[in-house]
Amino acid sequence: MFSRIFGKPKQETNALATLDKLNETLEMLEKKEKVLIKKAAAEVEKAKEFTRAKNKRAAIQCLKRKRLYEQQIEQLGNFQLRIHDQMIMLEGAKATTETVDALRTGASAMKAMQKATNIDDVDKTMDEINEQTENMKQIQEALSAPIGAAADFDEDELEAELEELEGAELEEQLLQPATTAPAAPVQVPAGPQRTRPTPRRTAEEDELAALQAEMAL
Image (cartoon, rainbow, N blue to C red; front, side):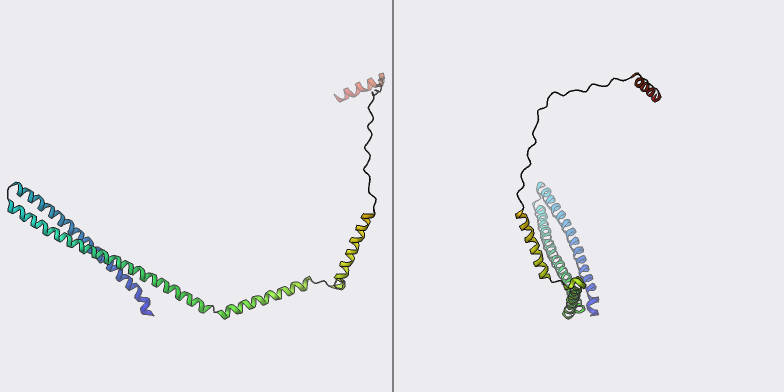
């Protein structure tokens, strides 16, 4: 168990170290490839100069060296391809290992949870809940049941009495005479209205009105 716990970080460290080493090697090969490309291009320029100088032998030697450089460039390209392939495989293996470890951890956690809560405990808990629910239902029914004098009433007799009352009221409504509609009021044409003559005010009333006006001011 302890070897598994302490072995995972070491394996992960080894994988990371290997990836770093592959990256360094890849960078080194790319630098060498650039140098060889420059050397091959330089040999081409030298061959051109020797050709212009009518030095055919020297120009051919330059082209031979260019071919050698190109062979090395191709070889370095193959090396880089292999390193890329190795890096891809290693990264895939690392991802697979991490996935398996995560799944294993989840399975262990689920197993521990199942040990903590087994099916017997679940059944026992559900039985207790059902029992408490049934007890509460019985308590509510006991509290809602009529007590005292109301408990002696017969529900069937009360229903029959209610039906008799409803039948008697319906019969009474059928026996009542139909009411006639009220007659429309007769409109009398309005004749000329006589206006009452306004009474004439006396001198005393005029003086009283003047006095009240002065007091109001």
